[in-house]
Length: 155
Ligand SMILES: [Cu+2]
Image 1 (cartoon, rainbow, N blue to C red):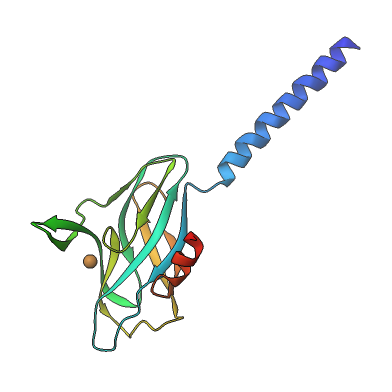
Image 2 (image 1 turned 45 degrees about the vertical axis):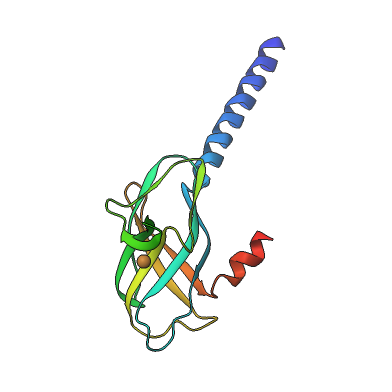
């Protein structure tokens, strides 16, 4: 009788262990939230995309991005050049530290779109494929809303 109890305890323990491992695996390493872009005027050929990148398990690097709405895409940041904010390409990608959320936001890191194929209009959505060093490519949907969704959700 005692042996059976111990066996049941052991089996339960193994079950719990397995399910917690399975559960951890089901949480993706990288989760993108609140992806949005600015509206572009018809004469403007550049755009910017912002988002929150949450990294759960292991460090990674955002090394690039692609979209069919722009001919060229670069990862940018802003630097303070003697009081003037200037954009610079981030060489080597944007480092992502596990357990943290990296925010791409106005005045800081952003995904820069060059030669926008057609104006980004309010309410439009488009797909952007993000390329990571250690995680498979991830395609996300970006909402063109000038950040209204993001600012609403931050309140
Ligand atoms: Cu830029």
